[in-house]
Image 1 (tube, protein in one colour):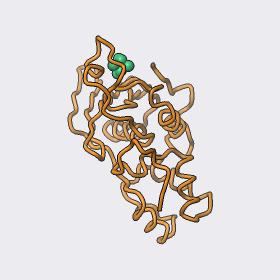
Image 2 (cartoon, protein in one colour):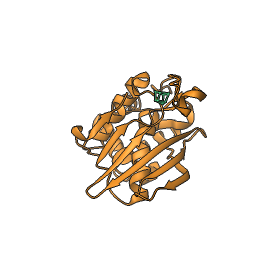
Image 3 (cartoon, helix red, strand yellow):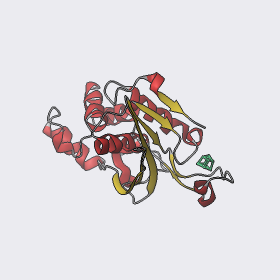
Image 4 (spheres, protein in one colour):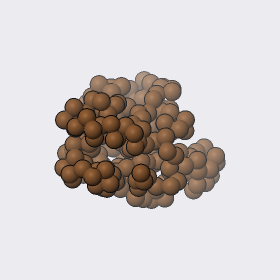
Length: 201
Ligand code: SF4
């Protein structure tokens, strides 16, 4: 069957290429009722499920269809540097082997994540090492949300704030960044208040 994974994203990232609307279209393509989309978003992005088998309020047949249709990968920590002020810098490996940088900034009452929207960057700003190596690829919405999930697990704390200011120019990957911000804001996703989500261009 076909689904609406943008062509420029690798197949290995599976459902992480889809935002909530994309999951809604996937559910319709699979012939399932629309409320299934919210359930899947809650499992994938709200609870960070690592396998479709965990989604016990979905029917077995739907879980099997999802399994056969799209991989459900997670980002893995490759490197982790901890600064004396508690800041943690991560190099994360995505499903196709691409790596991206993410930063977790803890303060007394907040955990802020600076997440990447692209691997590499085409903008070429002279002061920036990322810009010198060029664009590797855009990230899918779920790959942006996954960066917050990794940091939350590593700190064992809820992420309260997120800023799109890691690698990449968010507006050069506009639709996916917007989809990611909606998932971060959604009660089915991470439930972070809109005023705590920032885009730095
Ligand atoms: S837009 Fe950001 S990531 Fe891209 S080259 Fe400029 S500073 Fe680096």
